[in-house]
Length: 259
Image (cartoon, rainbow, N blue to C red):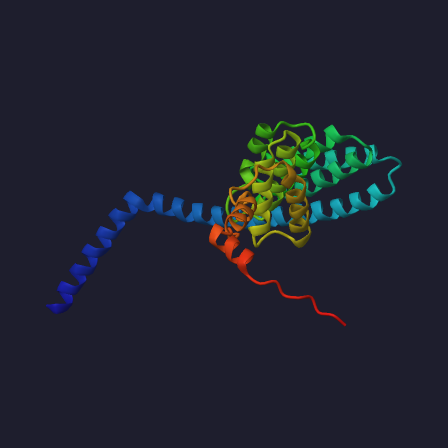
């Protein structure tokens, strides 16, 4: 009797499983197939990106060698620009920096600034490289850009903790000096000196900025204290009274010593 009940129970389970499989079996197979395809796609994508990076690295090294042999800096800059436009593996940022350097070597300041700004405005580029490009572009504009425009350009690297903040402060100090804002230039130089992230060379230039700004700064409140002290010493000189004058007149004269 027990075996009969067991067989009936197994038949019911089998029948229930068959119904579930008929109802949901297609979905289970589809899910399994999707997992296999997804895993294969991820593996394929990783292999493709690795291959693309290796290829870009090799092409970039070739481009560096070719740039050294280029007839003109303009030709090398054009080659780097073409490479930057065709790749998206991070090497386009390095190519833009080399492109800008070649433009500078050719005296093409505007083209170099445009290459630096392309990196600075690239949201996919690392922040450290975007900040460097911002500073390099600012160096090319500091002699012509207004102080307010320079502030706007340096806003992205003026955050606390930014490694480019001291360099941005130097550019702001220089633009302030050009417009005669000596107090602001001095304050920016003081901020450079107080910043522990400031390189030694940059800190030395900040002292030079302070020295140049010093003659144009308003006198501090404590400086006029010296004349006042002199007046106080003069007032403290003892005044001889009439009684002292009379006593000196009545005093006997001391004969002069003779040899």
